[in-house]
Image 1 (tube, rainbow, N blue to C red):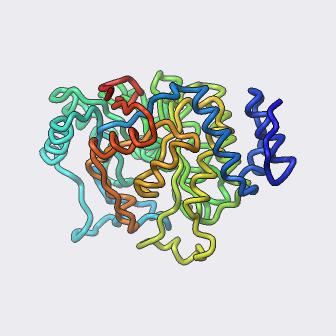
Image 2 (image 1 turned 120 degrees about the horizontal axis):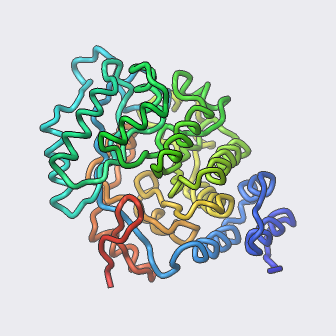
Length: 369
């Protein structure tokens, strides 16, 4: 057993368990989140990252967030992006030619995929998405990483279909994989406060489970730092880990902090409770240690900025996420960070790693020597 200097025996025991290859439990994870022992927790997270994936490499993807509509009926308190049905001034549904042009721009810079998500549009049933995906696939060689679980559930209800029927039809039309959006915190107490009209925790997890059973891989996310407790962050991770034990369908976990500008949830979160960069790095490190069955942990430079996104590579992350040509949801809440392939390559090299452009399924596209 490895001796680790920390502020408490509970933290030391949890970190020693993890280093010895033993799965930590929920009490261990909560102790790590409460500990403030960022350096010790980060060091163990980095060691476990190096055991799980190639320690010499850091990956990233060139793709585009394509938000096809901002019309939404769920009006979540944390969202500054959506517009209500009937909003003719700021509401939109992108026409196909605009979507095609955005895909062509993505391919032109070496992109390999589009992450397409949008609001819960009351008028869009499954035939809209089938037609859109087939038309894209007939024109372009691109990975369609689209439709978070709440969107899938909305489409299923609107189309009077089951979740498996909906996923099967969308897959057959060209949908390749599902993003982990809409997860927020997978505890219904929290969801009843921040998104009462949206997918419940068990429903979100079931959409992912059904997608995995159909052979589709997905990602899992957590948006935290608002009304949840530290124990509820752990509960979120526990539920992800349980489904992963069952299906092995989550290829990556991405966590980010609540962005407060321009949304109604802002008033419910005190300034002193807003998560700091310290909180972000600690939570990410704990996710690497606790989620021992998820290969990839992604740094969220989009919400944290490039410097913390780079620092996160020493706290369990092995992936820098996307160059992200376009992003509308986080920026609508007042946080706008931009990058390029060249900048990501530079930042990865600066921490002594080999930059690797990957595709959505973590296959190599280009390796920088």
